[in-house]
Image: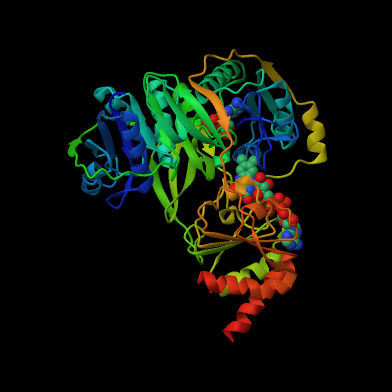
Length: 250
Length: 325
Ligand SMILES: Cc1cc2nc3c(=O)[nH]c(=O)nc-3n(C[C@H](O)[C@H](O)[C@H](O)COP(=O)(O)OP(=O)(O)OC[C@H]3O[C@@H](n4cnc5c(N)ncnc54)[C@H](O)[C@@H]3O)c2cc1C
Ligand SMILES: Nc1ncnc2c1ncn2[C@@H]1O[C@H](COP(=O)(O)O)[C@@H](O)[C@H]1O
């Protein structure tokens, strides 16, 4: 399962570094919701089918925090492609992950399934999974909210008009998942303790010339409206219902 | 800057809005050069053909319809191959598509096939030897200006960020049979599961009432359900609620949930995080019910009640019942 360390933004974003990065001084770090669900899915698959689950990240030294978090939930071991903290575009991130997968498979045997989030929470690139699939010559399915492995195949469900579309591809495969595929568990204290001694294999790939090259970030201007206060507590009910009537929705 | 190829997706014989928006971006990029549109005949050539004939009016100068006996359902790698091959044949300088789920996965696959960069969800495109785009990050709470360092730009447009433009033109429509092999068809839709129909759907509801962490529990939603019943509204929730297991993820509104566009959105006990608000950009009016008058949602809402939702929501229901007699 591939995860990406991102700042835990919730409110208005402020920028730093010549408008090329988010000012994260007052923020914690996390992984995106899709990836949280991907980690949970990996843990469940191994619980159901046995085997080994691996978490991989391409990110700064501090991303060991996110690797440990994933291992606290039951992931077996980690691969850390250590960067200097600069972002990698989707093409170069996918290429580095492919190299790492090939190197790991050469000694540890093949992965049946490579899981990713559908899109990274920060960059929203929508591409790393399908690039990995293409490079490894494995089928890649994206936008998945249901997954089942049986008899050398993975059945994937995707939300579609009026229900869900079904894909079925042979293993090994690459699947990009969406939040909602499962409800992730919380880490347990013993899980956290065990995670401390699980192995992380580091390496330092070289960042190539970026072909989707960021020039700068821009915080979009949103006209901040100041809400009209209809009242305080239950006494506000008549004013609310007047408002509903004036909107014609009663 | 040369000619541009645009993927157009269609349903029931009509091109979808997001594709017409992509076509507008493709025209801007072509800057007077040819604008090729590609429609892939998933549901049979007839429906695709019907969609194709309207595209000249939205900026296409040449329309291509691909039909193949194996394309009976969506097959993203096959679609990507058809686009990539046509891009090579036509020698286009850019390939554009809609930033829908299908558009993003197909265009990413085109980029992977051609070993080119891919810029998803662009809100603005500037033609030139190096195409410069503005694209959406963090579900739209941040924008990025980026240069596409490639001889051919591959991108999608963020839904509803670029206006479709009626040119009143017309375009010749040519149908062709693409070359596909088994590998291109390995990933394809092989079945469909119908969803159980229940109540008003979130995405289409005229009124949506959502609860957040402030609701406190699964049972805390009962007054919200009651008010929703009185108003014919759908019930939604924030991510704090889904990850607590109080409501299913299908109820979640926001960046990684459903995006809604109701006439009225009522947010109860929701702070108004950017990722939540990303899902309600289309709402015409927002009423926030929150006990904190400094919650961020106060700057995104039109109306607010300051107070405990557990007493405010039942009072609103009671007042509606009283007036209805
Ligand atoms: C990549 C990413 C994607 C995300 N996608 C989504 C998404 O799709 N949807 C989403 O919702 N979130 C999403 N989030 C999470 C988001 O950042 C917030 O954490 C979440 O929206 C908070 O939910 P909340 O407002 O219910 O909870 P809180 O932020 O905890 O707010 C609770 C609010 O309730 C008020 N309150 C408490 N008790 C009461 C009471 N009794 N009466 C009235 N008011 C009360 C409080 O004053 C407070 O304002 C995403 C986050 C990330 C990083
Ligand atoms: N730097 C990274 N390290 C590990 N995984 C990544 C990285 N960047 C992207 N991914 C994975 O690829 C998914 C899609 O990312 P993207 O295509 O960039 O939107 C993410 O949800 C992650 O699972």
